[in-house]
Image 1 (cartoon, rainbow, N blue to C red):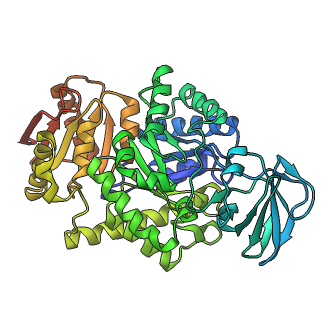
Image 2 (cartoon, helix red, strand yellow; image 1 turned 180 degrees about the vertical axis):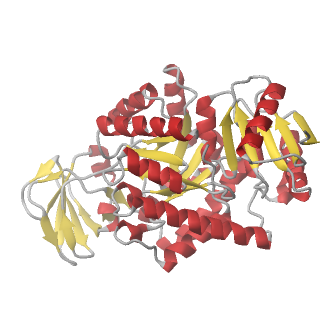
Length: 474
């Protein structure tokens, strides 16, 4: 069994052309990757199936549980086909036409009527993830006139964002439904829902999964729109995890607002006891270079200090030249940040002044987590639903957290939680599971005779109602 000692913040890697090879995936996991992301905006189902098979083979080989996240494309707005890409210059006029394609220079085809009809004079348009910015200055019946604000090239299928405006598109597209069916069939552990706007979007996906007898798949809400930020508390309540998509948020908000927005979303996720995942340009320079920049290192360290559960590498491992090195660097930076947090006793968990307003179970777990730190005990817990693991992780104790569960998928899902080392235990009785976990952890060298253990378990849904302290004896 491979266990990374000490590191609490988890690493998720995206698989793409640069890394969809079993040996590279194995090397990334050995370097510290804890979870795998499949991006359904790119590649084929055949590609994804190859990745899934590779990951499950590695699981069996290493004896670890590795969660797989299916990241849906969602209702992405893109322009149509531009038969001949054309250069635009600052100050130039171009037109948008309701069409699936265009041939002539100066015409941007927009195939989605609802988006076309939502444009108003003064709207700012961002194309290609920020490559080109334009302003709407005249809306006519058969075309919309734009003023180009910077030089660039208009190409087919560029992303299209209206700054400060969300268009009410369906939460699930036909492609998403096809991809969800694939995820269900191939036992993917999480589904990441793109362009979430409100809690009802989460409920829609959950209802769909329940109809397909796949309610055990957990849902990650991607926060990447203005509406999602405005509704973050309700979304965090209904989702199983939160992903902060900083790149897309930068299309809707001024860039200087993003750092504090990130901090607020992490805090709200902690309040709800849901893991937070931070994405976008963590080590972007490593797409081309073998070492990150100083600014990237500072950015990652700040995220760790804020208490984020997981960090997600995207282009760095999907298309970058140094996927394994990116994981190694991220793990190194995380360990340094966490060691500093330990030395300075930085409080990164759910704030102590809010504990008394929580449920009795929250207060019980908080007290035991603080006690475990005080007496230098290790936390061992048993969970069926994941609730007890969520509660423990929420309080961010610096001690080791070992979680046993009788469900393989649950063990995988808990792997992205801060500080949690999950184990599949083929026991449904908490006391038998505790005995099994002690044997496993002693055999692994994770604990030994004389160590103190704080043991927790839940016997009922959403409850944590078994707690005790004991010493491992011969």
